[in-house]
Image (cartoon, rainbow, N blue to C red):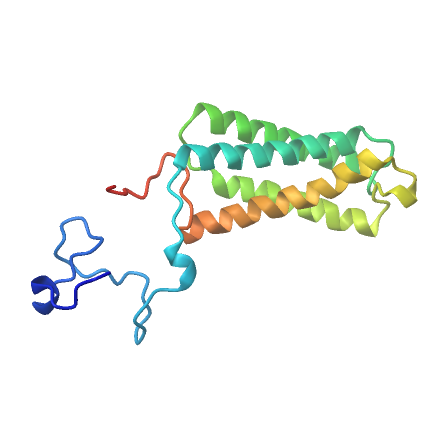
Length: 175
């Protein structure tokens, strides 16, 4: 709870949350408002864990693309080479993400977007569903291709908004 009679606040110095404790913090507050949007108050500062989660989700996208390409049902004409391209791109993304400290999360969004596009084109074609003659695991992996891609895009949006942070960045918490 803040003290309304604090000498610093009465003097007009809002020292909370700044590096040198002398400048006002109003970076995310819109003009005419008193508070920032609700989602700006959610901060998860686990950069290495978030980095590994993002890499794991892209690896899952690549695995599901490879499993769909290995399946008996081609989602659309010439779909297998496209699925293998997504798989190869995901593998290279994960390898680069593990061995370097590059900020390559926009590339992962491109992989996820390509996988969603493949899923949508596959719906118009002959997607591997049970009623099309696919096995239950194959149909589940096809749907997992969409859900993993959507999960990556949600995590990427949270990363861009500032709710989570991925290595090598940090939110510089002082606790």
